[in-house]
Length: 330
Image 1 (cartoon, rainbow, N blue to C red):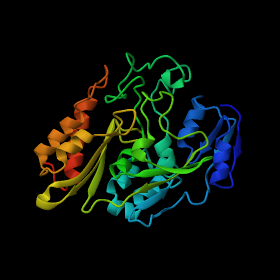
Image 2: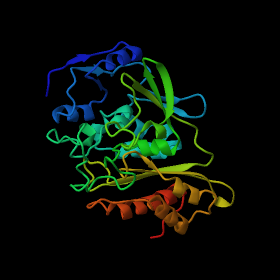
Image 3: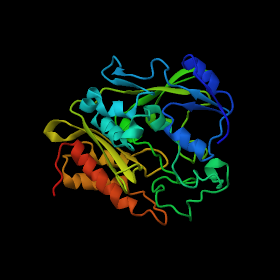
């Protein structure tokens, strides 16, 4: 690990100014940054300590029926917040299932959304993969058990965030602050595919700080859930995760719906195909199963990860039914 200095900014504009300098890295919870430092992937000359910045550490109503979550809010706070548990259950459930209690006590909302890929080739300091300026993604033709089955290539990473699918299921947006001022962008548009730029995972510009996440008011009668499958229940990332939001109107038909998968694509993967099939339908097990098939119809597994397809279908079906208030048969 290289030597570096720690700098504490006075406010968000000062933090943005510091982070715009070359080889400066942001520190919030520090969970992912510490890994990157130890693995030799990050070698900053200065670490900008964001802890303590005002306006970034609270969960509060946004004044328009929604809720604003500061980027420095801890995952344990998200999991336990009464407002989130009541109106945005999938978000609270996603935070509660992230990693371990010890990590949830440190990890922040912003850090969870901005964590780098967990691909073992990317994390290996001796491998110069495509994401690190190399010429190839070693997962293609290599060990790819945990890699993408949807929209992969030229890099086959998967997005590791637990929170992102649940937040996108509610149409959340993020507030960014940088030298050019503040801007707000939908979280679904915040993440970018390797096809756009294999070296990046999001549109955060140099010096920009993720300040907060805003979730709009849920649709009338909306229910939601977050489900994930892991190899083990200790410190681990999901093999597949699914967040679903379902609102049902007259004749118990689906009036609004979002289905978002995690750990299956380089970005949180929203299935517009499944949503189109569900919208206006009378929800039951058969419709949910057809929606799950539609969500995975474009899956292209690699040599070692075809197992993800049936797991994803099962989780999508279960999430849709659970969010729709229907108990799955059996």
